[in-house]
Image 1 (cartoon, rainbow, N blue to C red):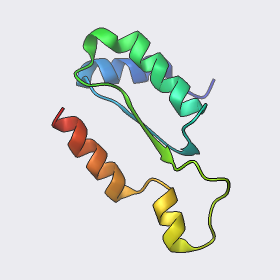
Image 2 (cartoon, rainbow, N blue to C red):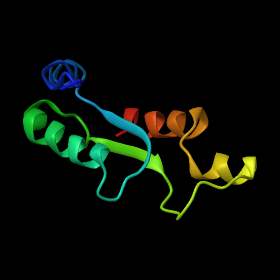
Image 3 (tube, rainbow, N blue to C red):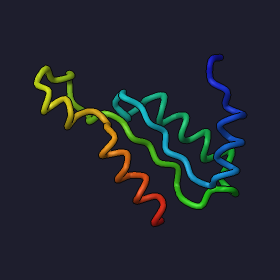
Length: 88
């Protein structure tokens, strides 16, 4: 398995917060399932809910760069999510 869950759990326990970031859509995604496993294994150590961030639920990736920017996560959106978590 290319994912070191134990390392992720260790870091979440040390920091108390976690964002699972992906470019896939979140509904029924690996990221959503992984966020659940993190919540379950690190519940007592969390200072905020585990957050997930991914692409909008649209049928296809738009070719238009402006629409693609709206659909996919980016540094600006991630920065806002981090700010929100730090203020939780």
